[in-house]
Image (cartoon, rainbow, N blue to C red):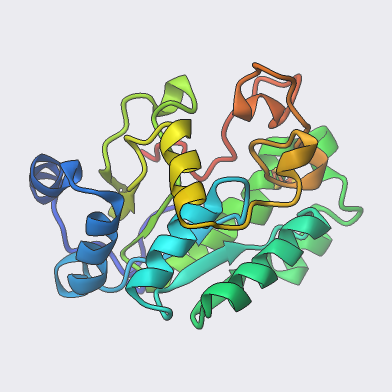
Length: 242
Ligand code: SF4
C-alpha cells in the first residue's frame, strides 16, 4: 500500500527515529508512552495504542489509562474474536474509564466479496488476516502518523531484533514493551492487581481470533497456540513493508 496524499505520515525521519532509540528507548514503557502523548507535534499527530485485548494487553491499556483516559486506542474487530475477548474489552473499558476507544473492522462489502461464508481462514489465512486486520488498520492509519504495539523481543525470532521505535514505510511503530520478558508482565499485572483475560486459566497464553488460537501445553512457547500446525507466525500487521 502506498502512502497517498491524504495519509497522515510520521513527521520523524529515519535519523530522528534512530536518535530516539539512542535516547529514550532505555526508559520505562510509561516514559515512552508519556513522551508520545506529549509530543504529537513532533510525531505528526497522536499515536494510538492498537490492542487486541488479548493475554498481555492489559499492561499497555492500564499504562495509557494512567496517562490519560482519552489516550487513543484502536481495537481491530475481526468479527472472529472469542466472546470472552469482547467481554474482557468491555470490562477494561469500564474499569479503567477509557473514553477514546475505536473499533475498526473490514468493510461489509469487502467481507461479502472476499469471505462470504466466513471461512477464508481455513483456505487462506494470510488473505483472511489481510482482509480483517491489515486493510482496516491501513485505512485507520490514514488519520494517524503511526501506532503503538505490544510486541516483545522474546516472543519470536522475527521480533528478537526489533527496536522500540521503528519507521515502517512512513509510519511510526512503537514497541514500548520490547525489552520486557514474561516475568515483567506478570510482575506488573500482580503489582497493579489487574484482571487477566478469562481464557488464560484455560491455557490460552497468546490470544487472537477464535478459529486460529489454541491452548498451549505446559512449557510450550506462548505463541505456539497461534495458527497451530501452520508456518504462519504473524498476522501481517508486523511484516515489514517495502
Ligand atoms: S487470525 Fe485467523 S480468523 Fe483472524 S483474521 Fe487471521 S486468519 Fe482470519
